[in-house]
Image (cartoon, rainbow, N blue to C red; front, side, top):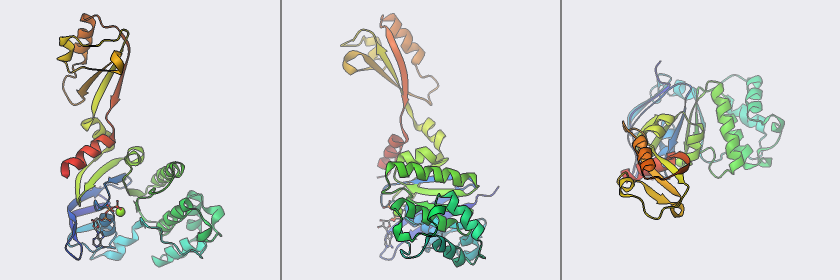
Length: 308
Ligand SMILES: Nc1ncnc2c1ncn2[C@@H]1O[C@H](COP(=O)(O)OP(=O)(O)OP(=O)(O)O)[C@@H](O)[C@H]1O
Ligand SMILES: [Mg+2]
């Protein structure tokens, strides 16, 4: 199946000469959740805005559902829902009317049954007659999502859906995203919270200085790039290690009661078996063993640093 979004060699140079996107290529499969991870100013909003046709590209092209976003703008745009980074709502309007109006702007016929479905899905139905100004920040963000879903898009862009939101609301938002995915909507979200990408994305794209450094299946990314550490707790503290163990790269922590062995999960041999044999030969008695994997955070920081 063709990707729902195809971005080819997309470049954006703003007036004044600043290049915010430098030849981005990206394909997004229908039904997936893609998280675009990048530091401030990386070009995340520019990329999303260009895909949505709000910002005109300097070069390159974007197709959504096979429609070119420039030559076939209306068809492409009607497939897209966008939740912008900034809150933009009419304070005196009611929730219901705000979402209705949004649907109207896309030239879709009135369909209050659909609006009701969307508002219920976002737990906003009991607030439908409230004025926007009476809502909390988290609810306003949900209204923005409801607006973006009002015209039944197939692709939903969420630009930093949880920026400045407390931990509980953030988890709430993750649940909302998960619910939306079940309806078959493709979701692209930007974030600089690594744990957010880790929690909800199928694939993670890392963007820095207007370039996509990588796009990869989240689990694969973590498995491939991750180093693992084996922690070995020992019965009798050691102050220095026997030479045979130092040679294996073992280090001592926790005032001599814990040994740490770092290994590469991609390596053909991890060296663990040999290490355990050596420990036995040295008469070091183990009380516990555990492994930890380097997090997406470490991978991300490493990648962005490399590109700097
Ligand atoms: N209208 C504009 N004119 C000139 N430069 C711009 C404009 N909009 C954005 N930029 C610049 O382009 C770069 C990318 O901005 P963008 O908003 O896409 O980053 P971002 O990754 O979304 O950042 P953040 O995480 O802070 O939202 C920045 O250096 C920004 O200053
Ligand atoms: Mg942004």
